[in-house]
Structures are given as structure tokens and as C-alpha cells.
Image 1 (spheres, rainbow, N blue to C red):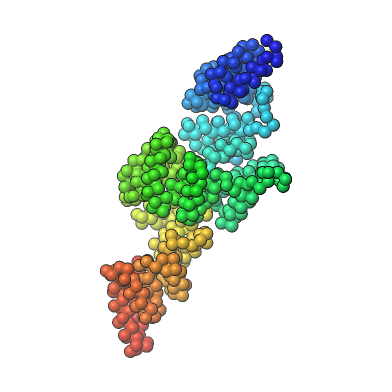
Image 2: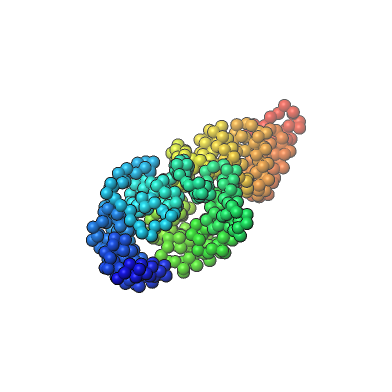
Length: 550
């Protein structure tokens, strides 16, 4: 058969593959390989078999060839067949015995006899070494060697920054801390035309920087044009409406505590792309925070109907039951999500939270510890362990874990708030003031959600007898919420300590209007009335007040 006819048959095989006609592709590829015995044609036949899900036959064909261990593409495809067959140890043996260090640098990667044969290679393609590193990472992850998986994913991204899947695994599975992510991103070598990708990757990771820096990154990406030629019809098209970018922005809003803003953004995004994974996950989290049980019910029903084998679907069901405070049912479905995907971080954290909600501390701690082991780059398990220790009044242990959470994610205001609560509980009021003020500096926009933090800061100032500062923060708290008994009673008590009995009586009355049977306010109101009467008779009189206030 002439070369021209063979080339037509090769073109036919490629066309069949592009049209997903795999049986046709396998048939014609087999004939071309039989006629030529060319390694490139054998590879094309193996590729057709792989795409047609004949993994064992494809592996046999590749393994029988004499160049499988010398040609990187043959070796990689053979390892992919073993991946599909779940033969992970054999997969690693096929990929070779290269080593990787803590920074993701690979040693003994190059075999001096290795070739890279690709007749149909394009100008822009993913480095085969990067793909091999990524496959090694997946194999180690399946073997539950998460430390090695993390190193090989880092190696894959460093070998070729265009290997997005490796970066997605690192970020989605919380394998890196904020500091490690920043170090990795700064070490990546992008081409001159890939500046936008560097910014995009930094948005995909943890939003550990200050609010202004994160916002600048989003704005820079939103203005990124796909063509610098003003005469081009695509000149004004930007990444502003890209689903992945909007999902990153929604995640940032959620992390900043702007749950309503996050929910509105994910709602509009899911209207456009209802099956976008990351948007769905953030949408569920925002709905739980807002207590939107109706939305959770609809979402969970749709997800289970569309994809019952996915962990996210059953996680959504767990979120619904958690939202309506049926914690036993929520635990059941969070557990089902973890059984479907053992490295699905939200399900592990939800599982622990469902136990914690019923004060079942031992089970909650077990779930959190598992999550902390599986996801070293996620600060939430460590944070929740600290909160559990705080609930049992083990304040020193609580402080230790909260400080670890701060090291992992130094931008989460909740961590600083909990550190402030621990310091206040240990009567270290100066330290409490420091942590509560640090909390407020990490909040983009002060909202009602953070009113308890402001009240706690006012309490700490009152304990330090810094009454003007305490009064100022109580008033700021009242601007956020006018229905807090703690704020009114704390402000009344502060005025009482300053012998401003009229103001104290006013705020005691307001506190009692919210809770008429509050014993502390009732007793202190009587005391304030008596003190005011005595004070009018004897200006030198000073009331003796109990300094302990809960």
C-alpha cells in the first residue's frame, strides 16, 4: 500500500477519534499498524484502544513493543492504562524510579536512552515530564501516601505551569499552606504571553493577602483582553464573565464573611453554568451560613438525581439536614460523601461539625484530626480542634491549636477572634484586646456577623478599666445590632462603674426590655437606683460593684 493511502487511513483514524467513533478508529488503526509496524502507528492504535476503554489490550500492545521503556509517550500511556485498571504499584513501576525533593525538583528523571516520539505534536503542548509527575502524584494519592502525592503535584506544576490539573489537586485538596502556595507560584516560569495565567493561578489559591491586593488581582484579570489589536472583533472581550474567575471571587467573598454577596454571585453563575463544581460547592456553603434551607433542599435533590455517585451530591444532602438542625441525619450523609471520596475536605469538616453541634466532642475531634491529617493546607480542622478544647475549658491546648491555624492561614479573622476569646477566658485582657483588634483589621466590611467580636473587645477594655474605649466599642456594637442583651448590659455596667448612674439605669432598662428575667441586669438596676439616690445626697459616695461580669 502506498504512503499516500496510509496517510489517508491515519487521517481517518484521527477523524474517528475526534468524532468518538472508537470501534472504527480501533479497526483502521489496527490495519495501519499491521501494514507499517511503525512505532508511531502502534502508539496510535494503543491510543484508540485506550479511548475505547480497552485498557488491558492497550497495555498489552504497548508492553509488547520493544520501545515501551525508551519512549516516554509509550511509557506514559502504558501507565495510564494501569491507572484505569487501578494497579497503582505497577503504574509507579512503569513510570520509573525518579526522586523528588521538598521543593518539587525531580532527580534521575532523564533516562539517557529515552526518546519522545510524536508525529502529531503541536507547537503548544504540555511537557510529557509534567504529565508523568502528575500521574505519579495520582498514584501516590490512591495509595494514601499524601505526602509524596503533594511533592509530585508540585513537581508537575514546576515542570510545566500549563499542567492545570496538578495545581487544581494541590488547591482543591488543601495540600499547601498559604506560605507554600505563595512560594510555589513565585517559582513558576511562565512564558511572556502567559502573564494573565500567573494572575489567575494566584486567584485560584488561598486568598491570604490583604483585601486590596486580592481585589487588584481580580480587577487585573477582568480587564485582560484576548487580543491587543483594537481592530479585532475580539478586542473588547475579557475574562470578566469567566466561570472559574467568578467562582474564585465567590470563594473570596465567603472567606471574608460576605455570605449574602457570595450567595448572589453563585446564584447568577449557576444560572449560566448549573453544573460548575466549584460554584456549586461555594453556593452550598453560603446557603448554610445564611440558613437558606429551601435552596439547600432543591440543590440537594437535583444533585442526587443528576449524579448519585458523586460525593458533592450527598454532601449537599448533609448540608440541608445540618441547616434544619437534624444533626444525626446530616452525619449520615456527610459520612456517605467521605466514603465516596475519602479526600473530600468539606464532608470531613461537616461530619465533625455535626458531632460538635450535639456536644459529642470525642467524635468531633476524631473527624477534625482526620481532616487535619488529610488536608495539611486547610486551617479549619485545626481551628475547630482549638474550639473544641476551648469548649472543655482546656485553654492552653486551645491556644496551641489556634496558633497553628493562624500559621496555616494568617488571613482568617475567625482565628484571631477565637484567640481573643481564649485570652479573655484566661483573664489575659491585654492579649485579648490585641487579638480582637487584629480580628477587626482582617474584616473587609464590619457587619452584624462580627458584632460579638466588637462586644468582646469592649468587655476586654472594661476589664482593663479603659472605660472610654469600652463605651466606644459598645456603641459600635449597637450600630451593628440593637437586639443584643450583652451589649446593653455591658454598656450599662460600664456607665455604672464610671458613676454615670442615669445612663446606666437607661441601658439596664433597655437590656431588661429584651430579657425581663435577666437576674444580673435586674440586680444591677436596683443597685444603680440606690447608688443614684445616695450619690445625690453624698457626692463623695462611690458604689462598690462586683468586678466580675459574664
